Image (cartoon, rainbow, N blue to C red; front, top):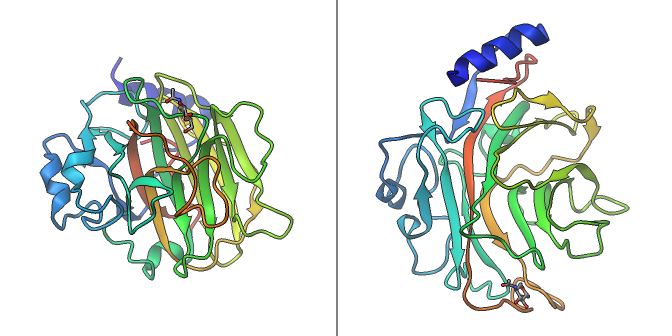
Length: 285
Ligand SMILES: *[C@@H]1O[C@H](CO)[C@@H](O)[C@H](O)[C@H]1NC(C)=O
């Protein structure tokens, strides 16, 4: 069955209407794009950040074939973000990292004002597995002062002793500088062979977050209530792989252990943000 038929049927069954909300940014990629497009200014993502010194995005991004079973890829394709031993950004020898930042997201733009819903989907690459002995940040909002992450999706062995029975879990945290410690807003197994679709409605005035989730092409469903979460501080949204070290002491951006021979990646798709100030949220395309 054609994917759009499936979502229409589920929408009618659920009794909710598909909505078309005003977009703030849109990182959904047409299938005819070449990765060289990411090495120069483009409408999708920053061509300058975040990647290892001396690298270009075309060396580390891998555009994926169409029809990969991701909810919001309708005529668009996922892109894999990979890291290697050379993924050392800005002298951060403790990290290996590469992330996409939406082109319009300067850190002081409209994406961190009002009420916005952030969408993204991600999937493992079985050919380039992560090492769950490490902590990874896969998606995060970093404030403009670089002092906190107001929202961060982590996986692996979370540093700092977060309750984490199985490191092979996707854990969405609220502001990591919260009094009393970071709060896990939502967590779910990081299952192989399927896209995990997330949405987070961020109210930058009321300082709340509500999380929506589904897998494959199933419509999103609310998986939390509207939760208190300090999303103030503006900043930029990152989508990629930030691998933290093991055995880090002090400033882990510069210290700790990273094994050589890294070839790891995560596929992303359906990255976009919509204006939810009128309550508009896309639960399906
Ligand atoms: C995973 O990471 C740990 C710590 O860096 C390393 O000792 C181990 O060899 C790695 N495992 C694999 C399968 O790469």
